[in-house]
Image (tube, rainbow, N blue to C red):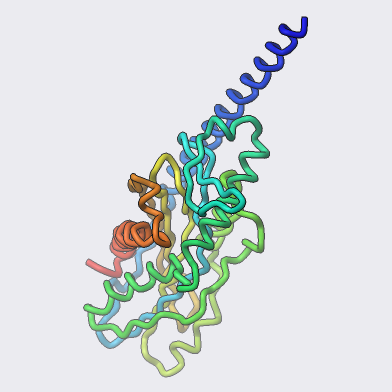
Length: 276
């Protein structure tokens, strides 16, 4: 009887693991489906096209989310006491319980984020802002970048893990908000036509050895505060071999991120009509 009881316990544990694996896969697939739907967000083109040489553009990067480490796709970054920040952890070892997997995801996300930002203060949205400046300056406009990171309304201090979506919902709400932005009037106080390009990251996660990245941009007329342009785009790119990508403070990763974010930025700028 003890043998059969032991086998029953093992079967129950195996079934629980299988259910959790399926649940994680289904939830992650659902998230990707939601993102695909987000791609249908209507682009709003700037009425006047690319900024003229006599104008000014001010780029405002919003706070960046941490890079989410999900328990899906066969692997998860896992942080153990006294261990390096970057290690590959088999999903089968995590699937014994969804709450445990989510907690591990949250811990790994925090540790990976700290490792990437480090003492240098590396900030993903600043990378995007620098790319925007590099693309717009050749047109002759004066382009500056805000020194401060603007907070995403509604994000708060919520924990970010593989199943959380507060950041995504907050960025989407900000993107669709038509409330005039009064803060920027000072930028056009001297009468020079000024546009503000706001940049934010909506989706930012590791999955199946890839970086899944989605960025939003808005263009605001500094004088009136009206939102006159919007764009959203996303893509995924391979980070394999993942372990090497995050070695030495993630230097290879940062280069890969800059390349992918640059491509998305180019598409957003073109969709809004700021570049030809």
